[in-house]
Picture (cartoon, rainbow, N blue to C red):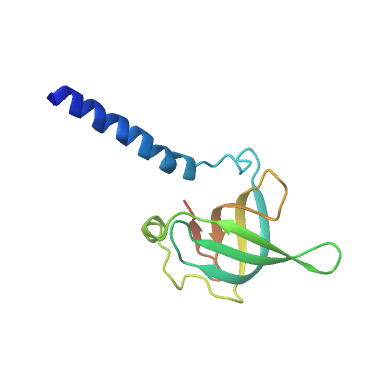
Length: 124
């Protein structure tokens, strides 16, 4: 085969295979025109790929609690922002700023978190 045909095949293969990666990283489900601030108690923290997750319980107007699931960046990128696997623990009272889910479920894309010590860390 000609070198140019091999280059064309390799380019097309990369484009097709790469579509999955672009689709995965869509942030269309988050409303990035609105930023919400809430305080609550960490119920769980998952330091996992492809994205870390923070679950917080927030008191609601009816006297109960609402659990929010907040997506963070990858552990690798979080570590560059000062995070560690034990940065937050179950029971920590934190304040979070996040972009809510468009479908109004309790959750979103975490922008930053204020730890009990007052330290503020970015999540992306």
